[in-house]
Image 1 (tube, rainbow, N blue to C red):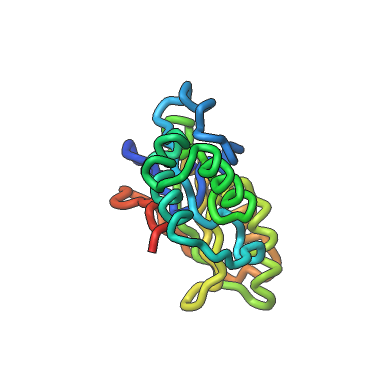
Image 2 (image 1 turned 120 degrees about the horizontal axis):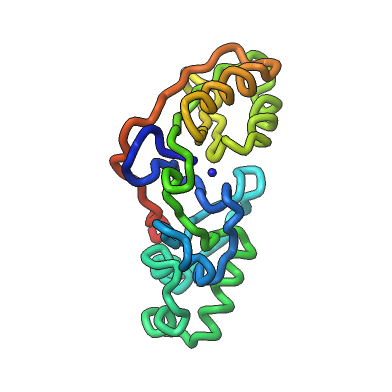
Length: 203
């Protein structure tokens, strides 16, 4: 996912998934991530693409479990069980089902600056022709960690994380703008992260 731009502050990511970018997926409690600096664990909701999502009915207990994990992805199942009124084994089974169904994933949220990625930007893309064809090509770019087809003045919005400004320029100029069908792009460089949450799971 390299996200924040010339910032020395926390990483600016969309609700996207830093961890998915670095390959940290489905890490039970993120126990193996304790050695990573500046790493936090969260339960992210809906980590699959829109095309893969299938509505899942959640009861109040499942929502409560999600809320517990969003507060701390490393929280022991026994502690969660006490909070929601289930046994440790029952919580473990529910968490596994939630992950298998794509409702959530337990991932490592890292500070990209600490990993060498200092530039981040949202790229607005205007397309002539089939938007999905362009979006599919952009999905394959490792620097793109968040991608949506949208209404408005842009057809596609993509969050790009890069090592530095030269890398960011290369991604925009040589990779995104070279895709057939891309009419124009506009780059919104991140200057400062003001808010980033992962706690929208319980409604």
